[in-house]
Length: 233
Length: 79
Image (tube, rainbow over all chains, first blue to last red; front, side, top):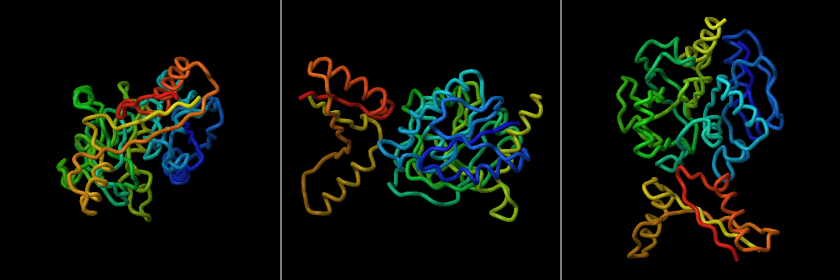
């Protein structure tokens, strides 16, 4: 599997993402500058890592979504390419219109830097096929604007279409209000595109890929991506 | 000429900033303040001299970048 990582001014989680990807692919992924207008040839996966692109000016991700490289990413996704956005990367995908909804300021107005638990709502996506059905895994959130919003009609449609991939839950797997620290609609932590090939999530699974550093709870996500390309040939 | 784009959270979209401002006003002793909603104003200096064209241009900018119409509504005023 060949992955590439996008870099915007203010991206700061690209190295952690590179290490996570390298762990499952054995290859150091190339970094792709936002000013580029084309993606490297033969790419299977484009990853938008976390950070604070353009200082979160206007709205988180709004400026980065207009970068030249994002036109190439939109074409890549339209042709069925796989795209993963984490934290600010998720915000950018939403602002670019590659994923539905919006991300508002956390309901508490606080920047939340803490552990969270997510339930895997479906394991038939390229990003979750190595999780057990209904799995709950621990990750870390670090964001000020991760409060997922969709109006009632859109939220119902996302649920009906199975686009809700990850939900904030208690460690026991209950989608309670207390587990939903940022106030997201329906405890939504991660959603995918209609074709399941674009995934965005606020927490950082790349933080949990090394047994010596905070465990490997996030590793199945990266193994899933690697596995889906191994089977696809 | 100048265009002023006022961007507000849509009705039904939670506005925690507005709420916090409302609480702070109450804490300062300002009575009788109902719902508070916080938005932003973006001032654009435009080379266009035709008000209708300036209006249309600013509206296109608002739709494309300045506002996120999933959560925000906007209005454009040209002066």
